[in-house]
Structure formats: C-alpha cells, structure tokens
Image (cartoon, rainbow, N blue to C red; front, side):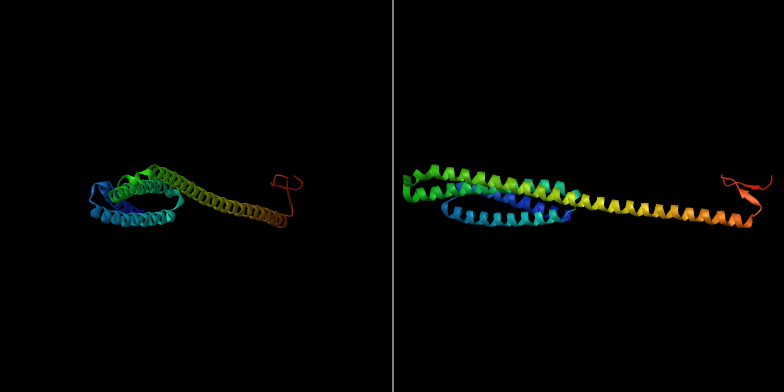
Length: 205
C-alpha cells in the first residue's frame, strides 16, 4: 500500500516541477507559444489533480494507526497544488491583459483593480475550502479511531466476562468435589470422626 503511495508521490513531484517551470515561462513567451503553453499547463494540472485523488484513496486504505504521517503529507501536497493553481491564474491574467492591451491599447486597464480584487477573493475562498477539507479529514480519522477503541473495549469486556464464568464454574466444581470426598471418607471410616479441620481421629480416644 505505501509503495503505491510513494510511486504516486514521485509522479506528483515530477509533474509539479514541470508545471512550476512552465508557469514561470508563460509571461515571457511570444503570443502563439503562450497560448500553447497555457493549454499544456491546464492539462498537466488536471493530471496532478487525478494523482492527488489516487493518493487520497491510498491513504484511506492505510490502517488508522499508520495513517497520520500520510495524511500530513497529503495536506502538504494539496497546499502545493493550491499554490500552483493560484500562480497559474495570475500567469493567465497577465497573459490575458497583454493580449487585450495589444488589441485595445490602454482602454482595458480600467478594470485591473477589479480583477485583482476578484483574484484575492478567490484565493481566500480556496484557502477556506482547504481548511474545511483538512478539518473534515481530521474528524473522519478521529471517528474511526474512536470506533476501533470502542470495539477493542467491547472485546476486552467479553473476555473478562468469560473468565469470570470459568472461575465460578471452577469454584462450583471444587465445592462439589469436596462434598464427594467428605462423603467417601464418612462411608469408609465409620469408626472415625472428622474434626472441624478435616483431620481424622478414632472415637473414644
């Protein structure tokens, strides 16, 4: 299971490194190459999202006692993915502004502040969404651990109850055996008496 996860990790690392390099090159490319590069980055971002989904599925199959380390790594990868998407959006906005300015000149600059404000709001929403997702994951893991603890306690209780029943049966068998031995002694030793301590002595002595 961990081997599959680590394989996905390596693929994700290679892919995100390529995406980062391409995003940084977008603003410096000629218009035709920029368009092609933007389409290529969009495709690779989708591949990275699919890798994260596969990694998430692998983590859910890991036993709860070993899952914490992998969950922390997943949160780090999701944060990295969010940063890549934000950087790509900024790169696309810069690219769109450049294309529009080439077509319209300075007439398109009037909405620049609005777009920047909208981008800030989008980033805040994405951060809030990631925090909610992380909180939900922690709640799910806590619930699973609690359920396993309750099951273990239930099994321990059953074992204790069975042990008590066996002890009671043993006490009952010992009492029965003691009564049988006392009866046997009384039948075979009619001229002797048993003192309270269970010792024999001859009558008339």
